[in-house]
Amino acid sequence: MPTVSRARTIPAGGEEVWALVSDPSHLPRWWPDCVRVEEATPEAWTQVLGTGTGKTLRADFTRVEAEPGRHLVWRQELEESPFERLMSEAVTEVSLEPDSQGTRVELRTRQRPRGLARLGGFMFRRAARRKLDEALDGLERVLGP
Image (cartoon, rainbow, N blue to C red):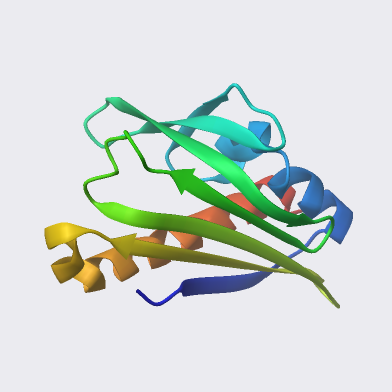
């Protein structure tokens, strides 16, 4: 499945943006549907996600790559999770570049649907675009003026 990406210039310095996006304990402040983070280390964490029905889901993540101040990659651990039947891969990337107005943040996600979910690729892409736009909105809300 193709990668979905969204980018925006956030009116904050790169160090400030990096401090927020690189620390999993800050995810509830800016990442959509993240109610809280548990067992967070820089290398692995569990997100507790809120659903539209008021229930919660747990999702485990592992940091795959980090180039401090510039690039961050994490993947969702799908094995033995409720997401396993829907996806065989879910990877998120954050890239930062200096910009005259602040810091250009690009978010990318790559999700590989599994089984019958492969037939709904357009729905996965639309949902991914919406989630990344909401994440950028969250970054602007937290770091904006």
